[in-house]
Image (cartoon, rainbow, N blue to C red; front, side, top):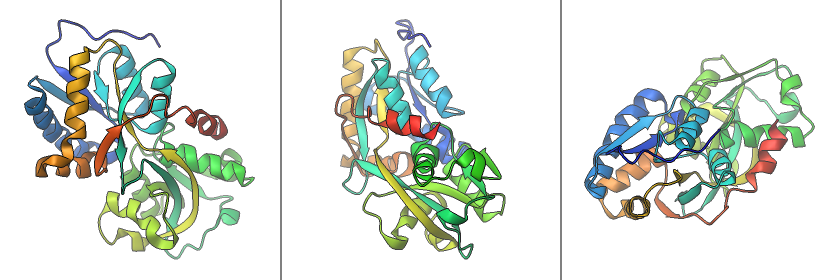
Length: 274
C-alpha cells in the first residue's frame, strides 16, 4: 500500500468510522458527529462508515480519509507506516481493555469444551473481536482453525453477539474493562445490546489486555487541522452533546493524547493469531 498525501484541492475534512457498531446505527451517529466536528472546526466535515477494518485502513493510507476512529490493530499498522495516532479513548478511567469469550446462558461451555463448536467473530483486524481471543485460545493449546467446526465474521459486535443468541454460533467475544471479574464482563455486552442483555450470556474466559482504540491522522494533513481535531476530540467531555457522542460513537468517557508508538506491542498479538 502506497501512502498518498490528501489532495490540497479538497475542501472537506473526511473522518472514517469502523463498521463495528453496525451499519445503520453507525450511519445515524456519523451524521451527528459530522455536524459537531463541522461546528467545532469551522470546516465542512464528511463522516463515512467503512465496510471493514481493512477498508478503514486503506482509506486513511490512500488519503481518502483525513482521520479515523480505528481499532488498536489498525492503529498499530498505521504507526508502523509512519502515521501518527493523536488521541486514544479512555474508558472507565483506563486506557486499555481486554476481551471476554462468551456463550449463551446455560450452554455451560468452557475452553476445554470448545472443540466442534462454531465461533462468530467481528473482523480479522478486530482486537477484542478476534485477535485477543484467538491468541488466548492458542496459548491454551487450542488451535481455532482445527478445533472449531466453523468460524465466520459478522462485521460488528452486535452481529457476533446476535449470532450466538440466534443459535448460529456457540461462542463469540466482546470488549470489556481490564478490571472485570465474574459477571461484570457483561458491561461490553450491554454496551452493544442494551441493559439487561448480559444475563443472556455466560463468561468462558478473559484474555490479556490491549491499548484502547485511537484516532490516526493521514500523512501530510495540515498541522492546523491536526491540532484542531485533537483539541476538539479532547474537549468532547465539556458539553452534553460531546458526552453523548463519546458514549454513542466512541464508547469512551474522554480522549487523551496517545503516546508515540503506543500500539507496537500488538504485533505480537497479531502474529499469535495467524
